[in-house]
Structure formats: C-alpha cells, structure tokens
Length: 291
Image 1 (tube, helix red, strand yellow):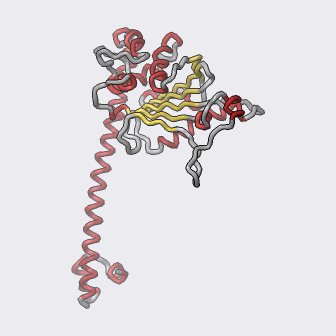
Image 2 (cartoon, rainbow, N blue to C red):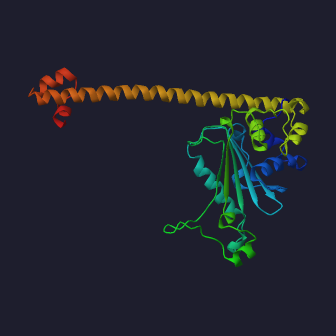
Image 3 (cartoon, rainbow, N blue to C red):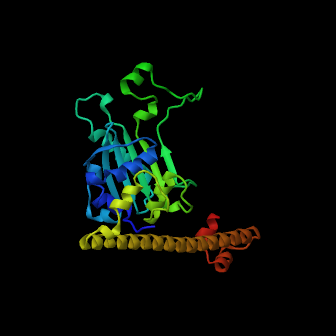
C-alpha cells in the first residue's frame, strides 16, 4: 500500500485541474452506478472557499456531460443540523442555475454527495441514498410520470427530476474492502488503497495523488492541514467527554433532588410539620408545601 493524499485536501488543491478529473469521475461512477464524465467545474455561492474551510468542509461543484449538477462535500466537523444543510445546499443550486424567465422544465438535476468524517444520525450502513418519491396515502401506489413527461424530460421516474442525496459515513468502515465502492471508502477513510483494488479512479489516485510527488511547499501545506484535522478531532472528543461528565453530574444532582422530594412526601403523609421536614431534607418550606 502507498501513502496518498487525503481526498478532502486533494479536492481543494489538485482535483480542480482538468487533468485530474478521472479521479472524481471514478468515484462518482462507482457511487452512482453509471458512467459519469465531468464536463467542467463550476463556482457557486455555496462552494466559495474560505480560510476556515481547510479543516472544516470542502465543497466542489461539477457539471457532467448530461448537464446535471454534482455537489461534493467533505465534512470533518460534527454538525447536528447537517441534514438541513444538505437541503439548503441543493435548494440554493436549484435557484442559482436557472435564469429569470425560464420555465420550470429548465431546473437542473442535482446530486448531493456528502463524505462525512463524523457520526451522522443513527444507522448501521456506511452509504445511504435519499430521493423523492410520492406515494398514495390510500392505495400506497407510486406517482408516475405521464408518457408525454417521460418523452419530454428523458427520464422514467418522478424521483429523477429531484435532487438525490448520497451520504458516505467513511469513519464507520472497518472491514476488508471487497467491492469497488468499499475500495473507495477504504481510501477515503485511511488515505491508502487496498492491495488489488481496481475500482474506477483509484489507478489515477495512485498516479496523481502520491504524497512523494508534491513539492516542499505543497507538503508543508498538506501537513498543516493534517495537523488541523487532528486538533479539530481532539476538540470534538474533549467536548464530548466534558459533556458526558456534566451530564453525569447533572443526573446525580437530579437523582438526589428526587430522592429528597420522596422523603419529604413520606414525612408529610406521617403528619410531620413543615419545619421539621425542611430541617431533615434541606428543602425549603415553600418547596415542601407544593409537594
């Protein structure tokens, strides 16, 4: 196995070169299960690069030969509202890439590819696919396109007109890569390519994304990026540990409070006066009166 550049950093610095499109095309072809040819890379309000992005997120917007828009995002930081951000990103692209006065038939098909390095939601799989389907609430049938719509839009299903979402939870992959998609996820997770891997695009990774091929300045920038990732994850782990500790402390205090309330109730049932109960439990007379 060789030592290769992490995919998120490669997207910012290397994969924007047309000579390297084969790498992205390989990943997208493997994931979408159809031949993807990137026509060009586009700029959008939602994928402008900012300084903090070097350790937080990476957006890359591609247009394929069919005119579809493909938004690829790598997210290192834990974000609880990430599902909503995925929706926001595709919604912005829908409106950005249609000209004023054009009909709705000009709305572009969008694929949202999300490579996440944190625990997103609750699920056992490593790859999730989401699309829009309309089902009848009485007959449970799927709403389909008319023959005219199929012919006009050149698609077979209503869902093909709407954005589709893919989520790759690469940190959760911990087994031997047996399929082309697993080979890609192994690389995204470890920065290494498994022996014998032949998934589309990985040969180009071997050729173009070797760390040894970078000059000194590129290596220094890359290693700073890796350091930022380590710091970020340490901060996340520290926050989680502190949160758990605070939660345990709060839980213990709440348990003690409930215990004292139960003692106070029992003492009231025995007919003891409020002042005595207050002295025994440490609760105020007002709190005891309300029980």
